[in-house]
Image 1 (cartoon, rainbow, N blue to C red):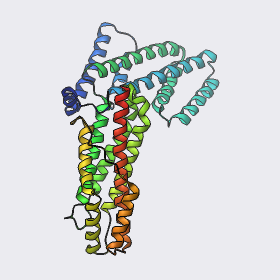
Image 2 (cartoon, rainbow, N blue to C red; image 1 turned 135 degrees about the horizontal axis):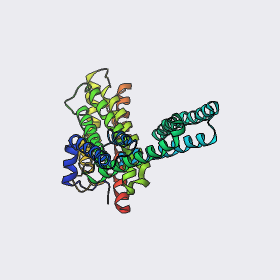
Image 3 (cartoon, one colour; image 1 turned 90 degrees about the horizontal axis):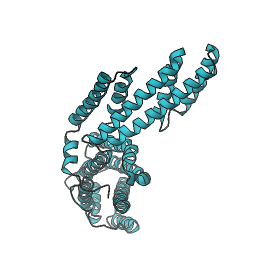
Image 4 (tube, one colour; image 1 turned 45 degrees about the vertical axis):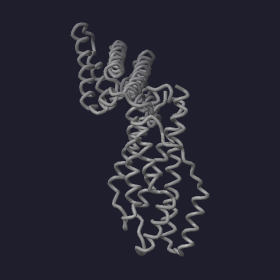
Length: 357
């Protein structure tokens, strides 16, 4: 099944009311933990509620809850095991402190990678176990058990009750980014525009959208087996969008020595390179990514060498010698090629995930 398969009505409903549904799911998970504590009271069951809030509060998607649960489980198990090992080896405060410092140094060194949360949990779990002294081993066992219970509740509620799929949010953010780029591109290259369009705020918003896509990649790959082998392609999609936004920002900030050269270059390249139709293609691709249409627009080959040659010949024919004009033409050429790369990546990802599914 392709990652861009049309979204169901339920998926659209969930995404439209994502905040309300997220609040209700956290409330339900906490209610389940409270009922367990009410009927089967055990020590340290408060850690179950703490775990649910930590996992579900900032990561409403199924993949996000799964990713954070795995890291919390790993961190708790390793932290508790190391703390118990220290208590088993020695009760001398000096040696206990030295062994703890070694662990904290290692955690600090490793805490900047993908598993940073697991290292954080391992560190404070170890300290809680050591602080418990003679009760440390018992506390470690109960704490581990209640955290595992909290992780289980968080995963089940995230997966089974109106699941918020990271895949859907990722594709809709991608569609939003494409629509925004189309608007900036079309506005700037409009024949009626004689000066730079002020698009800084819009481009900043688009950059935040692209960063949110980047933050969802691990969650998407965790919850969707088909996409685990395509994470690099998804990362490339983010990189190409970032380059497109940089080029669009440079276009928007372009300045001219006079309005004549501006009109000449815009008329030659916005029309002869079919630049304005590129905005329409981006809109069509965005509709496909969002699941509103079943297929991408017909593939259109872009001959970069021919495009560059046409641009140079137009500049020579019109006797435009302004450095600004050549720089502006180069920006349009690079933007056009990056947008073609973006379309190629989306088309390839759609075909490969459909074949794999």
